[in-house]
Length: 58
Image (tube, rainbow, N blue to C red; front, side, top):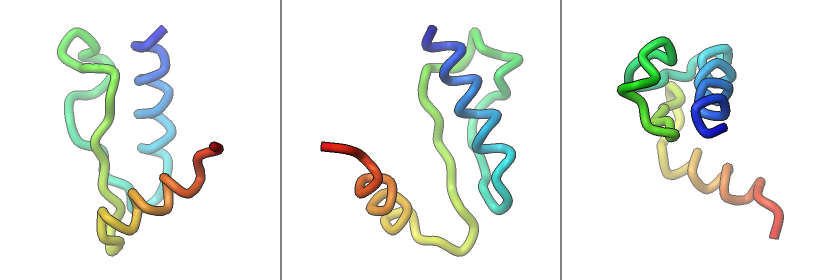
């Protein structure tokens, strides 16, 4: 299940303009963990983290 979820996340992030995903491609799932590192052009990582944190439900 985690591999499928990680692949879905990778695919979705790669489809967003100005998003750069780091790490091996999903075709190399043996080498991937169920996590994803990414960056958004021209937006500070702290701002992205704050935004994503605020999207979570309590």
